[in-house]
Structure formats: C-alpha cells, structure tokens
Length: 269
Image (cartoon, rainbow, N blue to C red):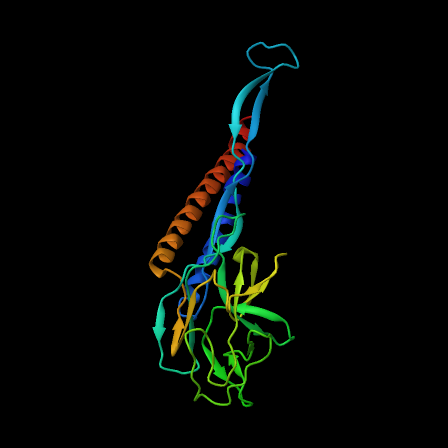
C-alpha cells in the first residue's frame, strides 16, 4: 500500500511540472519569436513482485505475482521550432526571419534551425528568433532588451537611424549584413530568458549567409509571432489538471485505507 503513495505522488509531481510548463507557454503567447516547450512523460522501471510462503511452497521458493508500476516522471522539456505566424507592424526596425530549406540533422532526423545572432551584456554570442528590434542612442541595432544585433563578421550593426532599408537577404542600406546563424541540432539550445538562447552543443554554429544549401528570407516591417498554439495549450492544461486530480483521489483513497487499518483493525486486535 505504501508503494501506491509513491506512485500517485510521482504522478501528481509530473503533472504539476507539466502544467507549469504549459502556463509559461500561455504567458508568452504574444512574445515575438517565442518557442513553445513540449514535455514527454516517461514511466519509471517496473518492479517484479514475488510472494514467498504461499501454495505450500518450500521455504525460499517464491511465486511470481506480476509487475508493479512505480509511477511516471517528466523526463525532458524540448523546444518546438515550428515557424510562427508573420505579423506586419510597419516598423522599419522589426525584422522577421522566414526559414526555408535547411539541411537535415543525420543524428536526430530533423532539420536544423536559423536564428539571429546577438551579443548579450557580457559580450557573449546568443541566438534569438525575436526580431522586434530597436535602435539605441548611438544608432546601433539592438533587441528590445538592449542586446546588440550582430552582422556576419560578428560585429555590432550601426544603422544610424530608423531610416534604413534592407533586402530580403539581410543586406542593409548602410552596407552591413545581418547575420543568420544555422544550428544543426537546435535541441542543444538552452533558454536564458528575454528571448535569448545559448548554444550548448559541440558542433560549430555556421552562418547561412551565402550558403547554397540553405534558403531564408528577412522581411522588414514584420515580426514573427510566438509559435504557441493557445487552443491546444488550453486543452493540454485541462488534461494535466484532470490527471493531477485523479492521482490526488488515489492518494486520498490510500490515506483513508491506512487510517482504517490503524484506527479500526488495530483496535480489534
């Protein structure tokens, strides 16, 4: 009976974490370039239950009862890199990245993904799909949080003012080229907040500029919306809530059984 406590508690914990993840997705449904998180639930290894001293078996001989599940856990959270909807803003500093054909990752069997490259406050390179850019007081193109947008040489881009033009390949009227980075395995990216992603993989991140194996377009005056499916997220949230409730009722049933065992069966003895 005690094992049932652990099994139902594990189910409650995993569903609570899943609901927290879905809540975070819904909170960022209007965040440009946000990538939704997906979760996968896995079962702990089953236990083989055996009974000893039954069916007049000799001492030391056991009878196999069957397998016992030991609960589930939230194994991992992975980002969904599906292209988000494109929304027109009319702002010259807003740039949407439309991904076309990119090479497949032989290990995962999934295509890579393209990102803008930016420089964080510590001078480190980070990646983002949030093209809601702005211009700082010195004329540099930055993210809305003040991170510098980089060109294909890894240097900051100075456009002077909002009166700049850009081609679909990312070539600015100032002569700079907005860099588009290709990450072969985007699952190696880690969220750091403010739309920034840190690459934690071992393979080199290359530029898609001038690469004949990759196609993309940059659209000025547009932003890519979050790829969160709000309707599906609400459905998943209700499913997680119902699963949490079911495990909670199982836990209460075990608690009531133990209470009777202690207060009633013990008293009769």
